[in-house]
Image (cartoon, rainbow, N blue to C red; front, side, top):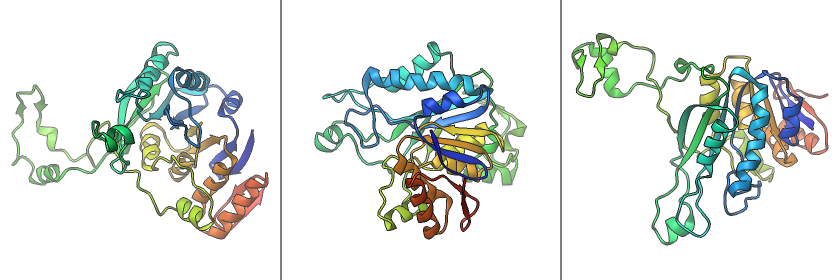
Length: 320
């Protein structure tokens, strides 16, 4: 286990996160958020298992995570869906993961979220594009597990803009509705039109994964370095980091990939730890922390040469 680079708030490690988890103190991490390789039938270049072997493999990480979570900590995991081999029938692996973590490992399901990626390409090709008997799979399940029944959370930190209708209601005060018990059973009180700074978000997270011009991708293209093929958008970890942690809390991603989570945590003033087995992916993820391609390339080369770098700002790095 080696540190590839660090910022003032976090460290990116190269190695097996099961080994890293053994070194962390109990009750020390406030949020683990990650997107592991999915249980796909077709092998991907970034590695994946499938079937029951996948569930058992992922369970080993969940077991190791629970002791290092704070009592009010959370474990958020993004899992894409898949189909059974050779048939247009969905795999239940992500739901089996949910049940296993709760019933066997003692996690609580604080809430289920669904990430809708409107820019996702049609898949699987056989059932959607060729035979045209299934719709495009555009939604991932995102399980929010907690160690206790009352994890740290503050929805005020993730309010969303009001709809135009609500803005009109707030502006007009009582002109658009009368306080009353609705047929649905909802009691619409006189305080319904209070401006709280935004609306409570739903558990459907509509976040397109369409980034094409970040420093990470621009530098990767210019330097002819292959980018990680399965990145999630920064708005996904940002939502949960703001929702479930406070400034200076510790955020951990055990399948760091291109370190989107570390970048998001750093920007939000949280301490962070990222771990990824592939050295080249870790080295390229340093592009997320620089606006200067020459500095970024120097950092990349140092990491690929087995050096650890400390990122102080965009023009000043030191070895440690």
